[in-house]
Length: 80
Image (cartoon, rainbow, N blue to C red):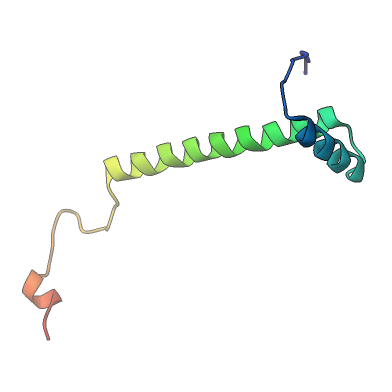
């Protein structure tokens, strides 16, 4: 994968804490940032995909195997 450098402006305290987290994970700050960004993007893409699938289901409806025939009445369903 081709890489590209970027410039970020982050609070110093956050950078300090992120460096410590990277050291604890035995990785670089750059790799830690890449992992965090990948997680955000993956979650977003997963959500979008799930939303599209569910909207398609809503549009198509569910196959309840009734073949257009409802064999009961509301009264029968709510019999007491």
